[in-house]
Length: 158
Image (cartoon, rainbow, N blue to C red; front, side):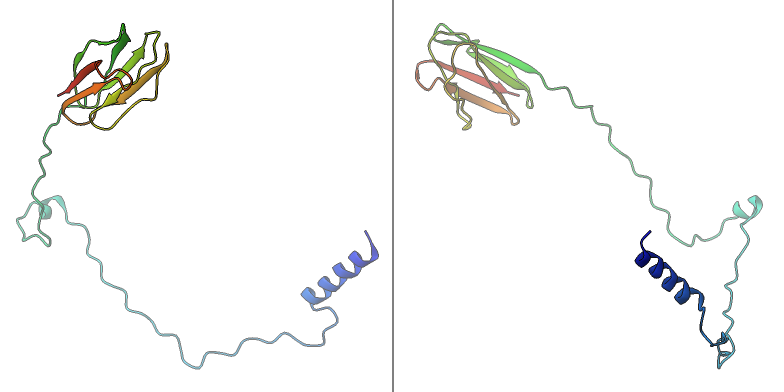
């Protein structure tokens, strides 16, 4: 340890222990007013089983029982495949449930795209690429190929 560290420790010891001080510890003055005692609220013992069965007016209204309607658990969403082959969508019409996903698999040599009437669209797809879209609302959604508008199909969402 350096001599500065020793001096620092010595100084802290003197300050905290009071070594070298001529003052005697003094006690705190007595409070001017005596302490006030607070009243303790009265507690009632829990009613016995005999007392509990006696008809008494309730302190609070009891809420009516709540009936929760049974709901069917959500069905798992499914994925459906549409092939793009020979300048057509196969199948051309597909019926699915709301929440299901359709995956278009581009199996043709020419590039194709999928443009759906709800505004969704793929980029130009080369052979082996896919495009998928999840349909969340019921309805009939027509779609076509951007470069080949004669290629059409429909997704029916129930």
